[in-house]
Image (cartoon, rainbow, N blue to C red; front, top):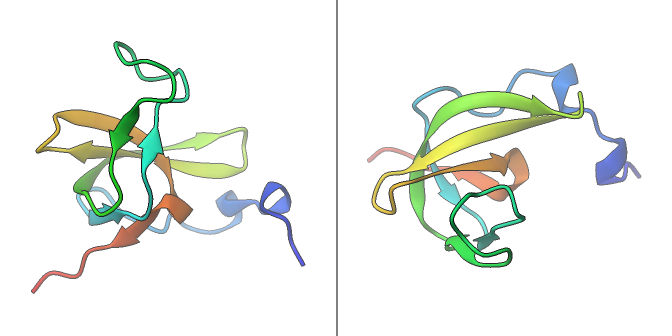
Length: 89
């Protein structure tokens, strides 16, 4: 079994592309990297929809997706496991 800390996402392509419509799979709280909000404050609620605005990396291991939650007006960095694809109807 591979622990999350052992997985290297960068060995493959990103799970989501620029402009992809995605949904948050869980509540996302401020870990101290979102300015103007208290640590622990909810930034995005489970089920909220946004669009991938940027794709970066973290510690040469994970993709970090900058997701623009337009209704909230927030751009939040999220891991792929925190997101799911929204199928267009």
